[in-house]
Length: 360
Ligand code: PMP
Image 1 (cartoon, rainbow, N blue to C red):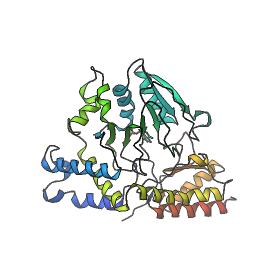
Image 2: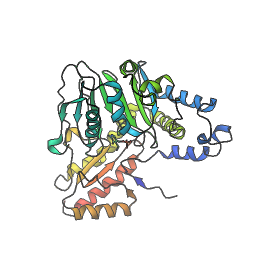
Image 3: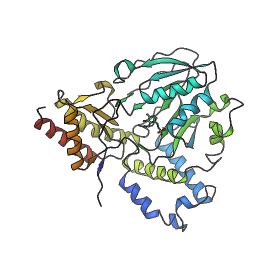
Image 4: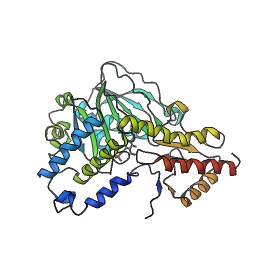
């Protein structure tokens, strides 16, 4: 078997024990004689699994009772539209913090619906290399932020105070990588394909009070309440992805939970950031230090030739997925939950060696 060190930005590495369980249960899920993909979402087995996953996620992430857990599709991209469609309306105002491409896509959807997107802070002036101060105003329907900026490698260390409204957080790239403070939270959403499973499933954890805001003309399948009131079984949900999500939850529980996951992620990222700090003239981090993401580590080398050379050498050592996003360039190491400390160490060794050999 040839498993590589996988630094892909998403879809991304899954824990090996999760993949092994999927393999073992593929033909016969727990004595049913069929795979999880082949059974009804309304049968006892699947409904039991869904209920179990719900309870375990609620416990793992300490989700208060006022929230429903929804299993949806369409990625975070669909949430960009779901949020303004369900929680605001034409002529109203909602706050948005612009920390990069994904925030901008969310803003775009609100504007399409005729909502005034109030600029509550932006890092655009410096190609999103920092987390801006957030300044809100009274009367907003919500305040939207992107907790981790996958492309740029910045992350909110502490969530801003939304004032008299609640926070909506796109956690696509750091969901379940650290504990979540639910205070002042209205809605958290995330595609599962980075820290929490396979692509094709989007988690939305929503304060039930929001259902009352839904406009009368909103079609049934685009209402959050439809998912909430039908335990996400109004239509056929992505059953296989829900199953994989459950396996990832068990794996996180075994690692010691979210606080432990956060400590582990800090230690992992530190292997890489410390080499960048050792060779600051060679490795130019995109993010300012106090906004450094523990999930996506972005940096440039002194020239594009050196970046190409580094990537080639990395691949020879089975370090894959390190090419940066085109809007930042350079390199990006995505070190989500399932990327082990060993992978980070191996990368840091190569970085140190490469800097020394190339005049760093
Ligand atoms: N938000 C963030 C922070 C992301 O990183 C991504 C995907 N990279 C998205 C939204 C879009 O997610 P999806 O492709 O699942 O719609």
